[in-house]
Amino acid sequence: MSWYLKRFDDLTNMELYIILKERTSVFVVEQNCPYPEVDGKDPKSYHLYKEEHGEIIAYLRVLPAGVSYKEPSIGRVLVKKEHRGRGIAEELLRRGLDFIHHELKEDTVKIQAQDYLRKFYGSFGFKAITETYLEDNIPHVDMLLQTEL
Image (cartoon, rainbow, N blue to C red; front, top):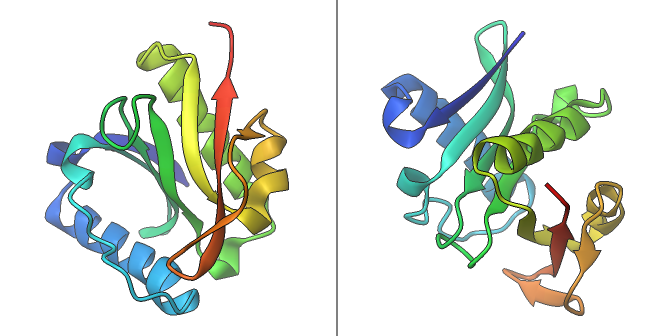
């Protein structure tokens, strides 16, 4: 069980392939949501993932300030179905936020969260800054985390 955080150019072809496969499995197939999963933001992002027995079981991408919003952002947060309920999502998000705060030296993080995860992100200090709205037919809410560095 290992955690990795890599820039796009540091990912191997196989790592990138597996990441895109898992993101498509969760966000397009599992959620029955046809949308452009490969959105052009990956080359500018950092990719954080957990590998277990050669398989990527958890992933998120960190988008630096200016890529999606003026603030840095976290997106494409996933834990493979068979690994959910083990606290991996909490550790994944904590590691992503630590990277933003300690390595990127940013104190504010903006996300676009699926509304059913509002409480999960709220447990990390995120606050809703919009009403719920539909994005790709899924209820979403924009949330902001502000911390003191």
